[in-house]
Length: 385
Ligand SMILES: Cc1cc2nc3c(=O)[nH]c(=O)nc-3n(C[C@H](O)[C@H](O)[C@H](O)COP(=O)(O)OP(=O)(O)OC[C@H]3O[C@@H](n4cnc5c(N)ncnc54)[C@H](O)[C@@H]3O)c2cc1C
Image (cartoon, rainbow, N blue to C red; front, top):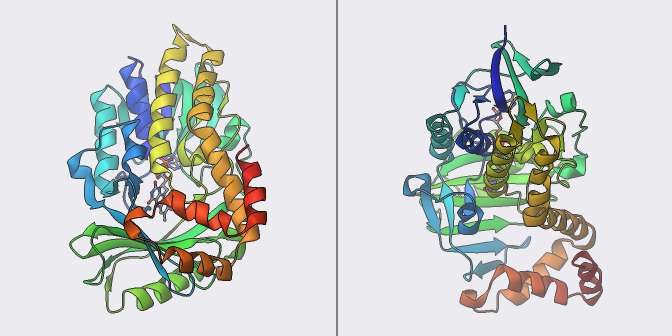
């Protein structure tokens, strides 16, 4: 026997919880399924987000903020540090708390939450679709797949979401406790010996604590390499620190999946590759896309039937608002991988380090990068046509 709902959402990360919450607000019967017993644990994230990433979808709650970040710094391969003072306010979040609160909001809005419910297959049923796993069967007219970067369920809807090795960042990350951690400053480290094809990061969490990790391009990775590089990085940058459990995870850095909707199945968040390919940031996109797709799903139900055309509004709005931005970040990622190396990054850092940090912004770094190399500038211009 299967339980019947209008909409089933699989995965209770930010994308899935937002989808379940906004779908429930349309008055539909919504079920949110999560394979883990506790949402958000272990946290597989640097937890960094800019104010803008939040504000379109949610008001950030004070209890979700571990640390307010006032400036960032970039360290070049040879160790030249560039302070970037002219940045929008950003935060290091408490994702464990935020993810749990988002589920609570979905439940308060009327969604049913079932944890310890791994979905292993999706089949067609009389009602629409049946999501099945060892914990039972749940049927719904619409299924929203928010099952994260390792998404295996999209294939039941006919998608091939396999990633090229170059389109996945292999990450190792941990919590670090050390008096050497700078307050209110996020630091990014580049260089082929630090994190080939990616970067290492230190995101402060307050009181001498930080999220520390690194991501390396999948085509330059091998078993255990990210962990080993992380250990080396922490020994060098934060010697003598206390280190938590090291976790590994992947960040999709590909184009977002097209189409986002097939008949009554929708993809959202990391499962849809809605991630900035340069920074690896996906929380803001997941919140936005989750909220949007849940609302559109709720509105597409007319009595017992689904208006499949209405579901396509989700892709249209996403494409217009953020889809082009994500595509551009993908092109830039490919471009920079091909046309820059450690020496080039050092040269740029050298010239930026002479500037006043208060006037240095991400845009300034970008302009400087491309203006150092006229041919690069010409080629890069094509990306923005
Ligand atoms: C190391 C690392 C650092 C990162 N740092 C940042 C950062 O600083 N800032 C930022 O913006 N982004 C960051 N990201 C990316 C960010 O974490 C993701 O983009 C974001 O979590 C995506 O949300 P989601 O809801 O799509 O997926 P997830 O948060 O991955 O949630 C997916 C959920 O689905 C559940 N699930 C999976 N399969 C099933 C199944 N079969 N049945 C039931 N449930 C299932 C999972 O248990 C999980 O709870 C980082 C990612 C990594 C790996």
